[in-house]
Length: 84
Image (cartoon, rainbow, N blue to C red; front, side):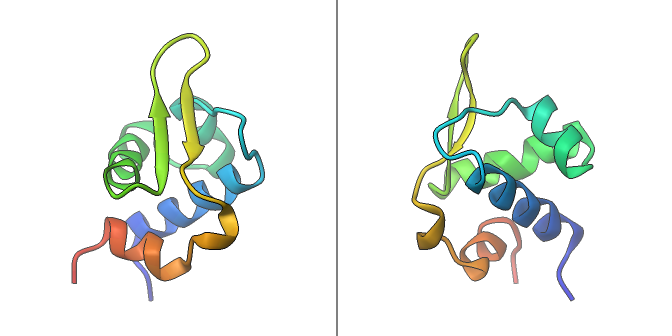
């Protein structure tokens, strides 16, 4: 069984993978994957810190994948947000 944090992270990665190159704000992402926005912000920071996601501030900012979706494994995502 995976943690709720890992589930939100996986949902976010999959959603961003369908929008390659299109930034998605934290609020949009939270609404799309049905996650609390404050919690998701922490999850996205973890994904950004390990280089799976890019984050850009500003009017046209948001989150995008840092790598090609085919280069990101489930294990990469889980290890980025969960400690064992």
